[in-house]
Amino acid sequence: MSEPGWQDIEIVQRATCREVGERVEIEWRLSARPGLEWAAIFQMADEAHRSGTLEWVRGGSPDVLADAVRWFVPGDEVDDADAEVRRRLAVANERFRHGRGQPGGPPAAG
Image (tube, rainbow, N blue to C red; front, side, top):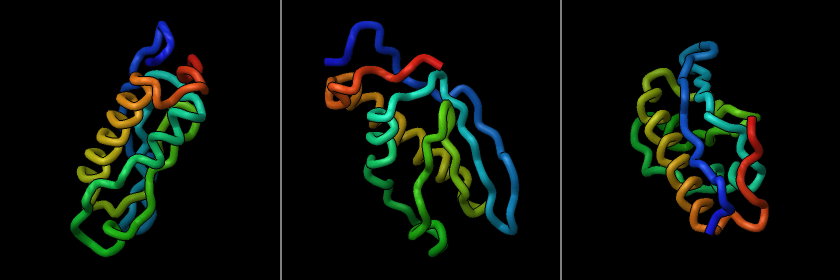
């Protein structure tokens, strides 16, 4: 069970940071700065079954940086990337809420 006062981390904003060729860097701002253990759960969450371009299917994963998630994705895959980030966020919150993120404690306040 998570510690008292734990609140799920939520996405508060999504923005395109820059475009490099046919790829875009997307940033999802989070409601709080997650702790290291929450970030690890987020990054290790199973990838969604990806379909589309080879660059997307075999591409990398999103990175948690301070109070944001950033990811370079093919421009045509932004909606799929958004869905994957939201799914990973839900997995991390669920696992952390039920104590699998212990003993590192809840995420640090922003």
